[in-house]
Length: 400
Image (cartoon, rainbow, N blue to C red):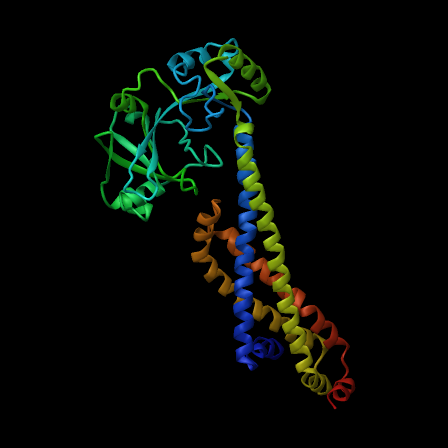
């Protein structure tokens, strides 16, 4: 027990160095855990997105992304992309393979007094995905506070707004504040009750207002016009056939785009983030390992006389091993505690910065503990090996 006690107190003989080392280990271990979380979250998001979009087909106005680009003067299919297009899509020979068909209508809302003046009001059927424009992933909008649109809202004056829209136009900097007060937003002269706030991690994507499509039609009177139609096919094997039939039926009305094409940028962005996070994690691990090994080697060299004396008066190799193991694991344990305190506030902040879900949870805590144990194991190898081999006579000779 005395060997373990000595090992735990040894780092604090030099308090200044102990503080520096523990702070470094806390920073390295904490950010290493966050980078691993970011890597895993990015890869999971890619996998989930690819799994989801393999059966998703997007229909949009013919020429919407042609020579005029997005927001061009008037796409060639502008007047033809209507509810009739929707009915045509639902009546293709392979209509039985359409698991879901969702239509959307967009209209811009411009407020020059705001920093991000250009917002979008989007009409959709309650229950359809909140597909925000400007995201890397169309279906990445998540309810951050309140609730989503429910079937009972189909004719109601209710809205789900983006995080940025809420902050800049309603003064709600923290989405959770929505539950504390009743907020309304004016849409084309009509007031809508804000029932939810969504977040995508993308400022442009977080600057929209989602309202029930029936209410949208009542407020804006767009006639039969539509902006987007998303078709979900029942299985991957039927996607190619459905795409071919849609293209044949909607030659002059719509561009038919498979979701993998539409989210290729998302895959590239998230893939780059995953690789960058992985490299950062490797670099941080190397730094943490070097710091721990260096400190323990320095500790071993400073205590050669002490170890020699202990062995001379009868200390066994087991006691020497326990002392260095206790020193390495004690130092790493304190660094782990510091890392956990660091991760707690930084996890959600980093998640918002990177646009991937990173949270302080049991997995993060276990990761911090595992990394700390690994650092301690690596750091104790050299001192343990040298301490066991060291003879009292050799120790005295080295000092003199």
